[in-house]
Image (cartoon, rainbow over all chains, first blue to last red):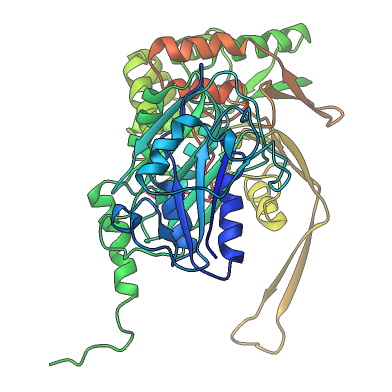
Length: 263
Length: 272
């Protein structure tokens, strides 16, 4: 029997981590969808741009994208666990499905999705109770980094500055970042937690130019300084020439160990 | 005689003024500077002028050398592309601001200063760019002091003040003559206590808080006091932004971080 769960909560409360755990422990097929959240007074939602989906699909290769319109009308697989994430600042006023943000209903209807249950972080005991914050004011800023490749040491310095307040009071930051050797990292930080997560993607790109996968940075906080972030990004990202300089030895290392016969 | 040793001023006038006030209040009249008068900070001319006005003997730091030599001396030591870009920006700005007279002054600074058995250098006796970290190999540390023919070596460059005593130093030499391979000659030298004293940094503290640091050394007793001096950090931070240096330098200074980034490879010595 299939089940569809709607999981909501404020930024950084652990929605995606909880969903990942559910997917990894579910014996059958799973699907995922991240709905666009809605702003509340003084509180802006960040545009995830697909970070969560790419991260989850990397960790769970068979994960279905519930937003795929071609599959919206297809019969659901038996024992499908469909997990829908909804960023939502305020706790629902009603319990259960009646508490689903009315503004999100059209998104669900468009994809023919009908949740069986609604769980909200900070309200429902089935979800971890820690790490929920009440925000009174929140800006959001995102940057598409498609094709961008980082100097690894510069990424480390930038992230340190970002989460420690060099570009405003950052409450939440997450990103998918490419390195020149073909690795990518899911970078995750929340003000209420100690330390950042730098989780490597299992999918490696070939060290042959710029990777095609999604790369994006999303930041939420107060008094953010996007112009200063852009200046630092420009100093951290590799040019074509430097990228080639770093990747060429990696390609050679992958060449067959046996020397070619000399003509 | 009691004397003060300051290092790594990094064009931070507020910090230098506070440290000199602290030294003056203690009635100390002999001051030695271990270089890096400029670089990253917003007042290179003011800091050089003050050192010259006070006639403080100084040796040349890596930044002082870079400003004169045109950055070719050690750009290979940057720990990241970001640090390199910011370093170049600071270098270019500083080079544009410094008067020709002050550049000539920096160019005239010696690599080291000596007073009896006390040696004063920026990084190490080998190079302005070499870091003598407090936990470096004891033999290597002893070698730096011994070959410089000093009892106490004063250095800076790491921006972290410390005093390290090197005791029980023994060098054993075995010489085997080709004519008599069965009877090598052995000689053992027991070395007296040597000391490395790092003065920390006036203008870019990196020891865990924002206070400027320097050291006071009593030659009669051998006592070394590491001084921490609070100063008007915000004054320097405002100046950084006003002159057009990267605002992140101000943020980093305000939080007790280095202006750019610390070199990961502390043992790096530029061979260019």
